[in-house]
Amino acid sequence: MPDIAFVKPALPRSGALVLPLPEAAEGAEPASTLRQALEEATGGALARALEAAAFKGRKGQSCTLWAPGAGLSKIVAIGLGKPDELTPEAAEAAGGAIAPMIAQEREAMVAAEGMAPELGAALALGLTLRGYRFDRYRTQEKEEDRPRLERVAIATADTAAAKAAWAPMRAVADGVALARDLVSEPPNVLGPEEMAERCRGLEKLGIEVEVLGPKEMKKLGFGALLGVAQGSAREPRLVVMQWLGASGGKGKRAGGAKPVAFIGKGVTFDTGGISIKPAQGMEEMKFDMAGAGAVIGLMAALAGRKARLDAVGVVGLVENMPSGTAQRPGDVVKTYSGQTVEVINTDAEGRLVLADALWYCQERFQPRFMVDLATLTGAIIISLGHEHAGLFSNDDELAQRIMAAGKAVSEPCWRMPMGEAYDKQLKSDIADMKNVGGRPGGSITAAHFIQRFVDTRRGHMPWAHLDIAGTAWASKDLPTVPKGATGFGVRLLDRLVAEHYEG
Image (cartoon, rainbow, N blue to C red; front, side, top):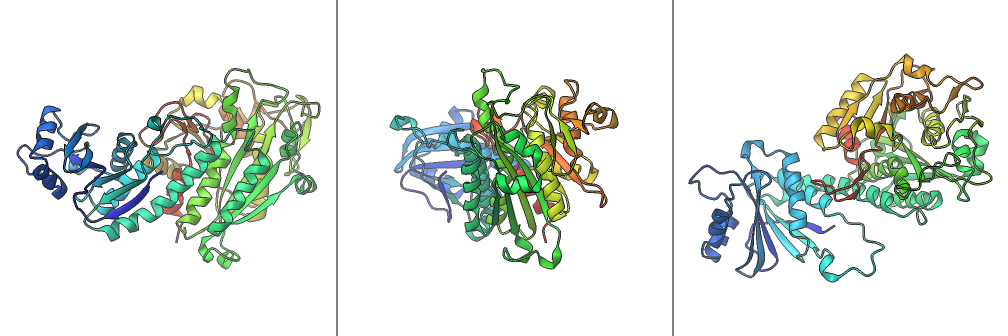
C-alpha cells in the first residue's frame, strides 16, 4: 500500500494528478484551485477532454488525459456525484476507484481541497484499502504488471484536520491489511504455531498476548478443540489477546471494568477430516481461519488507534486433517464447559473450536458481550450469497448495532432467525448434543450449537455470531476490496466499538 501524505494545494511537477469532481451546475466555475491552475498550464486541454468524454462529475464517471504537458504523466478526473450526497462512504468508493487508475505511477496527487478534511481522509482510506496487494510469493512477475505506486499526496486546505481524521483510519487499514495477509498465506506456511507467533507480533502495539499449547488445553479440558486437532501433525494453539485501552494500554483493567470480547475460528486448513471434502475447491480452505484473522486484525486496529476501552480477542487455532489419529464420526467429546458432543460430521469442526474458546473467554473475563466470527457453513452462502454475512444473536440491541455498523462500512450483515425448533435438531441419542442438525437450516442449527456455549448461569450474556463464509473472500474486485481476502469484520467491529463502547 502506498504512503499517504496530506499537503497544501500546489500544482505537482511530476506523476499523476487526480481531480475528484462533483456534479456542477451548468456554467459554474471550477471550485478546485488546482484544476484552474491546470487549465492554465495545459491551455484548456483538460476542459476539452472532459467535454469530449461527456464527463459531468456523476458518481462512477472517470476520464483520463494522457501526457497533457505541465510535466505530469497523466490527469485523472473522477466523478463524485451530487455535492450534497458526498458521504464518507462515497468518498471511500471514489478512493477505491482511483487506486487501479494510478497503480503504475510512482507518485500521485489527489486534489481534494474542495472536500471537507474528513472526506479527504475517507478518500485516502478507500484508496489504501483498494490498493492492497498480496504479492509475497511472486518471483517472476513482469515489471509492467507490478504496481509501482509509492506515494500519494492528498492536497487539502486543512492538512492538520485531515491528518487527525486519517490517523485512526490508517490504524484500521493496517488491521484490515493484517487480516488479509493472514487469510492469503498458503497453509504450508501458516499453521497454528506460525499464526500464534504472528499474534505475538502485536505486543509491539501494547497488546498482551498469551499462547496456550496442547498441554495447557488438555489440563483445562478443551476436549472439543483438541478433538478437531488430533488428526494433524501440527499442534493446536489458543491465543488470548488483551488491549487495555481504558487503563492506558498497560496493567490491569481500570476499576475492574468489563471488556468487550471477540472470538475467532482459526482452522488454518480444513480438509473436512475423516468426513473429507471433495477435491474441487479444497485449496480455498486455507481461509477457514478468516474469523480468527479478523479478530487479530481488529485487535491491531484497536491498539493502533489507541481505542479507549478494554478488549479481549480469543482465537482457537487448529488444522483439521485425516489420519490414523483423526477424530471419527461417532466419537463423543467432552467440552471445556462439561457438556458432551456426539461428533456426527468431522467437517463441522469450527463450532467445536468455538465451543471451548467461547466458554473459556466468558468464564475468564466475564465480558460485556461476546461476538464470534467464523467461516462456519456453506449453507449461509446458499442463503445470502456473497453479499451479506449471516448474523445470529440472543440480544436485539447488540444485533441492531452490528447491522448498523456493517452498513456504515460496507460490510453488511443480515439477521437470521433462531428458535427452539432449530435447537431440537441437535438432540443426540447418546450425548448432550450432536454437532450437526441435518441439512435443513444448517446455518441456523450451527448457530444454536454455538449458543449452547454462551453461559447464562450468571444472567444474560449478549452474544452474536457472524457466519462470514460468503464474505471472507472476494472472487472479483470490489470498490475497496481487491480480489482475494477481504478482511471482513475488522472495520465492522471497529465501528461497533467506536460508536457504542468507548469512553
